[in-house]
Length: 111
Image 1 (cartoon, one colour):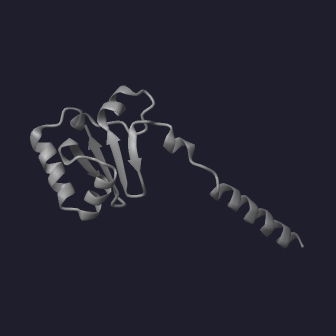
Image 2: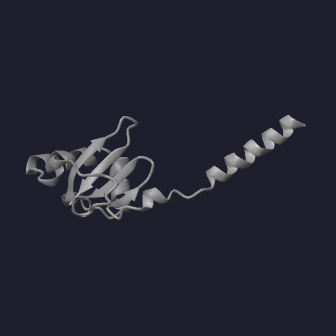
């Protein structure tokens, strides 16, 4: 009987945590879009916000033309990333930099 009660309580607690909304992800207005593999960061909004979740590395705040061209070429070479950015209305000429996470996810910095 104790095992049945314990399993019921564990199941109820697990279900309660799965349905909880993730408020922290919505707290920073500087992240334009975020899904499991693509995070789009607006540089201006992040550099001016004290509540920015994704701090902008200095290299992207003052990106060179060469750096921007390299980032844009990387996006063009990845059809899935390009499709996601088009879906979010990100224009190619506004892409400043792209970082790849260990899990293959991308952070795209946009001006």
